Length: 249
Image (tube, rainbow, N blue to C red; front, side, top):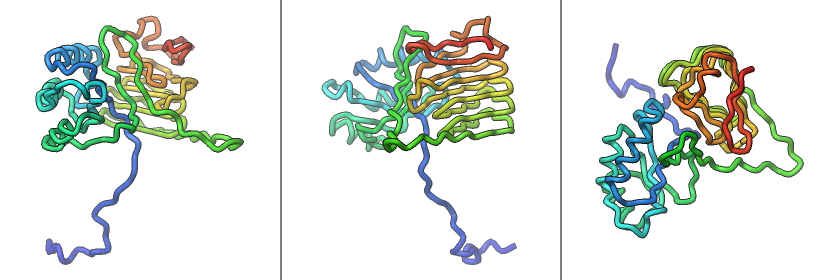
């Protein structure tokens, strides 16, 4: 077989660019003290180690733009905690130049990304999400329903714009996300995030709850905060006045 690169047709594309929606945790900084940030970050990660393990992270500097921040030390602290910084948002011109030197992209301060809002001393944390895209007046919203009949394996990440129905199991380490409702007719062992664009009416239904994390419109619970009475049972998960409720069905 010829290995001459000239033999390869120039008409065969080697790649393509596609737009995509990806949820990324955002670290909103309120302090420039690296020691305090590192300590609290590690404590937060202990609450949901699989959720944050090797997770990309956007660093938001808008809350510390008037403080002196050692960005290289901060990046090292985040990486040492097992998280991968992918860029910064906001910050001073000096901080942006340091970020460029560290090969970190500069995101628009106006961009909105689903945020893990890494705060301490809370079992149920609010994940800030971008507002839903407004529809034209008098134009009925079309809700898509994606059906997957194959198991979602560890490491897989699924994102759909409407509702998501899975007729198989979701494995540990897998993540399923939907802008609408999520239905899992098998065992849910991974992470399930419904209403990721801020739809507080979204729900999660599953036949066997063993999830690492469940979230509705940014409000989430990790496995350690799920009551034993609803584990390994069919459940409905929904919001009621910003409280994430899990009910047997």
